[in-house]
Amino acid sequence: MIELQGIVRHFASPEGAGAVVKALDGVSLRIDRGEFVAILGTSGSGKSTLLNVLGLLDQPTDGRYLFDGEDVAKLGVAEQARFRNKRVGFVFQSFHLMPRTTALENVELPLLYSDRDSLEGLGRRALETVGLSDRVSHTPSQLSGGQQQRVAIARALVNEPDLLLADEPTGNLDAQSAAEIMDIFKRLNAAGRTIVLVTHDPAMARHAQRAVRLERGRVVASDRATTLLEVS
Figure 1: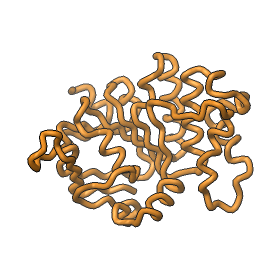
Figure 2: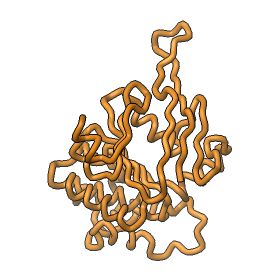
Figure 3: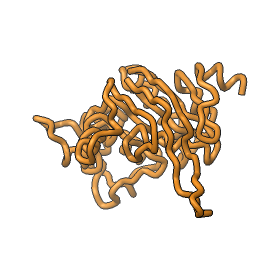
């Protein structure tokens, strides 16, 4: 499904004089359809930059990003926006919910840009998937942190994307809520959803099938999550 070939992402260094920061330095990685992959690394290792490249929120400086055989990094701006809306769902550490709108209205926001033939019932179905069918009329302030993250996951799922990208999705949650969120990801994956999870927490990464470790913008290990984390 996904093949990264020598992905490089450089940023201008604040030191100036032509210096660059190598956020990604030749990343090659394959992710098969239906996989649940955890991207591990310390702060500054490049894991969030890699997730942004996968979601076409950022452009690589060099390299190829093949999605179902198409080099999507070379798509135009409008085509990339359409790709993000139809093929990718995003879940972030901060829930990014609209504070004065209901759970259902938050979930339905991506549908405003959808060209699907029928949108009826998609928002309610997504909320049902994450166990919040009884909270459709609640605003974020009426929900716990774990419930807010469930709304964010439902919003990511509402367009039924091929790929779900999650950036530290349990970082703002207590242990019980974090475990519940990871159970949702595991159920989604068991149903066939491809998931890429960025985390610094090995306990969260253990829920994935495979773990990939980044250091200084390079892949230094890739193995079954339990195997890689046992030897770390």
